[in-house]
Every structure is written in C-alpha cells, then in structure tokens.
Image 1 (cartoon, rainbow, N blue to C red):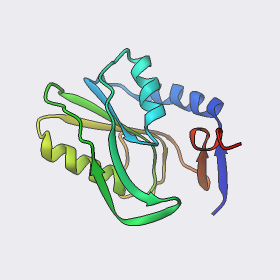
Image 2 (image 1 turned 180 degrees about the vertical axis):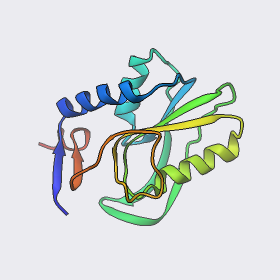
Image 3 (image 1 turned 90 degrees about the horizontal axis):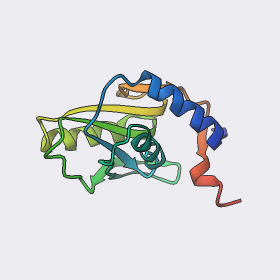
Length: 148
C-alpha cells in the first residue's frame, strides 16, 4: 500500500471544508485519541467550546489491524444533549462503530454525530460529515513531522 504524506496546510484547508459541512451545534466534542485530537482542538477553538474530551481506542498495532477494538477512558457526558465524535479517518469503520456502541449504551439520551477528514466508502459505517477519500496509507503530519 502506498504511503501519502498529509501536511498541516492541507489539514487546515480540509478542516475549513469540514466546518462548512457541519450544520449542528454541540455540547461537547470527543476526539478518538490519538488521530482525532488535533481536529478536536481546532474545532473546539473554532466553535468556542471548552467541553472537548478524549476517548481512547486501540484498533491497530502500527499499520496492522487488530482483531477487536478496545474502547476506554469514557468521558462524563451527563449534561450533554448533542456530542460530536471526531477522528482523522474512518477506514474499516470498526473503531467508530465500537465507540458509538459504548457511548450510546452509557448515554442513551445523547445524540451523537461524527466527523472525519478521511472516509473509505468500503467502511461499515459512514461518518455524519467527512471531507475526502484517502489515496493510500495516510502519513499525518502530527505523526511524522517530529521524526524528521
């Protein structure tokens, strides 16, 4: 699989596209750590929303997909009515499905939406909002820039 570097300049442009697509207000933003953290920070600033929490998952070991997705570090959403879950990419969709399953079970009264920069149409779930399809394995600037 070919690797494609994804620079900050493209990320910033794509987030501008994403916020134009999002037509809801939220009580909280939950990034799926680690890929969704940069997105959530910028969206939190854009929407002037301090309720930005993180949820953790383990679904990959480097580029190797694991048999199951583990979800932990569930935030307290007792006061929330609508929540935006963000991640960098919906690849198989397994991570987003598991996160939604865990959150909806614990908070059935909350409405959850999802947003991502990249989405593969072969995934088992489509995020509510997304920007583009990936062309190869994405090497995100936040993963690569400090290594060089």
